[in-house]
Length: 126
Image (cartoon, rainbow, N blue to C red; front, side):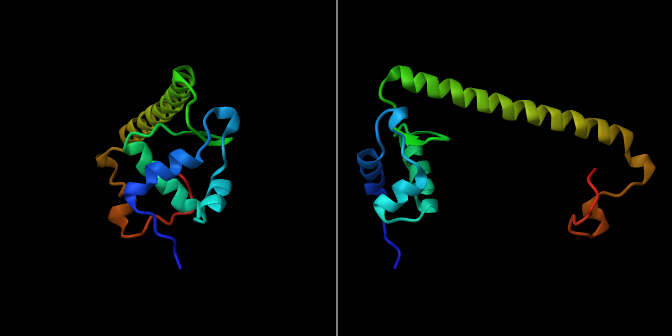
């Protein structure tokens, strides 16, 4: 039987079970075992708690609560680096799409995958 965690209990449960400070971080599987939940449930609980104001940091070493404002600022800088990397990748994709569309304009009568009726199962990349 699945263990039910009510939304009103998520933040207190996580606050009581996620350690303070990056050097004391806890991995998702360990936290799940401690609470008797599936790791996927832990991930959704963390997401919920973050959306509702609990600052939970995460990285390769697991989850932790920031021990002070400096640790939270370092975590913020880390997240900004990730966001900038994603934005850079999106810009590269946009540049490629723009170039592709210019070289394959509608006058060449090339149909898109969706207009061919297939489900995008081509074995060749663009």
